[in-house]
Amino acid sequence: MSLGEFDLIAKYFDRPARRAALGIGDDCALLAVPPGMQLATSCDMLVEGRHFLSTVAPERLGHKALAVNLSDLAACGAEPVAFTLALALPSADELFLDGFSRGLLALADAHGCELIGGDTTRGPLNICISIFGQVPMSPGAGALLRSGARAGDELYVSGKLGDARLALEAFRGTLMLAGEDFDTVRCGMELPQPRVALGLALRGVATSAIDLSDGLLGDLSHVLQRSGVDALVDVDAVPRSTVLRAQPLAVQRLCTLSGGDDYELLFTAPPGRAHQVSAAGIATGLTLTRIGRIVQRAGPRQEAHIGLVDADGRAVLHASASFDHFRA
Ligand code: ADP
Ligand code: MG
Image 1: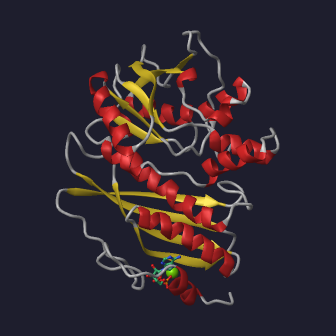
Image 2: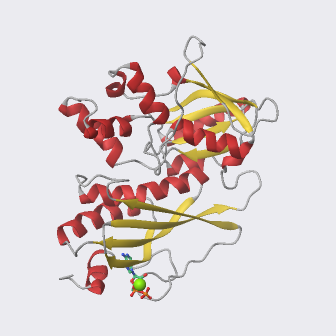
């Protein structure tokens, strides 16, 4: 590398610690967890060709690498505190590093989440972020989990689903989009907005939550599996953009139900908390849409079942596979 490892860290990633007791530069960073709080931690890896295309602008890649981790904290109702960055780079490409670090640190600043350490090495481009957040140790209003959905709960989703998958299909050449529409859905894919404020607002309101990274049906089935329940989903109620609505129904359903990379929150809440749910939507400026409900699992079945219906209540058939990195 022309720019040495330590110069690179100093130039692009080392900034004074504000929240951490000790940031970059020592063998460990130090983080204090306030009394009554639990540490929430998650880790996500981004590999070129699998999680992002080589065409993505470095600034957007920096944004997305952190966004997917913030989205995990959001799903747990945790407040972001800090993160570490393990980075493998083919070379010390300063054009790349400049854009990447700007996109990454801008989103970090927007969420008050600081970079406290990492590791840097030469190798095929690979980005691995570990993130740390805090959540109160409170029985009724602590971390949101996948395991809390109960029969009778309503099922909600934030924002709109499917644009990221639509953009991916356009990149793959399986469909054509007008230039402006392509730019719009491309933003959905490359600049996801983690729903951190919503996760915080749903503590004590939602009974379960998950962020949508692998597609609605696949991620919903994780919640159902952990909670031991089934669900009914109205596929026509799933919110989608006007760009996606212009596509054939089969494309709309593929993108909204099995899309992936949405980074919206899917959550459940009892009907009696509907007004608290809408208050959370208003407080965060997000559209929250009721797309179905949780039902009891019939019989001793191990596998979760998702019943799909359309607006007229007719059963809908859909291959419910979610995005699987070892199959796709
Ligand atoms: P060690 O050899 O003890 O693992 P390094 O020499 O790899 O430490 O790193 C020096 C310091 O720089 C450490 O504090 C480490 O956390 C930090 N660091 C290394 N790479 C990055 C990075 N990509 N982003 C932020 N901090 C980094
Ligand atoms: Mg090291």
